[in-house]
Length: 209
Image (cartoon, rainbow, N blue to C red):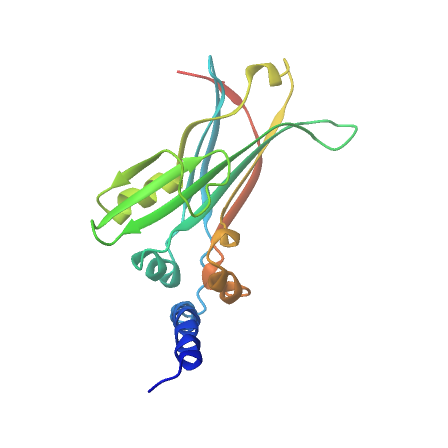
């Protein structure tokens, strides 16, 4: 007959063993892909002026690395962040920041329904996923929504000055800081998880159509 202390010890070990098995599985998943650098490219940036404010239209081109794709297929969400900084040119000093906006995106795959979901928020979403979102039937449709920024309001019209010249600094990245803890440990220094792009250019603010 097993004594009660031994039974309690065995019961206490079960959650720990389950957590260790999960950690081992996640670390194996991180080791699947080879050393492919998954850098992205900003392929388009355009600002327009409208009654709603200063709107950004931009596109980012990239392919999901195998490790990221595999994690998504297993139901682990990925987080992307886009940042837009509007700068006014100053010949006598550093350019002045007149506006700054962020867009946080949570991309997830639901294995049971085989559908993709993208949630978008101006602030960090977190693993709870409490943000407005849209569902897609295919990976390609969901990825296009992550890569495209249409009429994103980044500044107020009152932020603009007549006859001033402006530059736009646009940055996009996979935010590994919001991944589960085992992933954060495993992805450090791995190029396969380095999805990011940045582009700065002088840009005219066009009148909206």
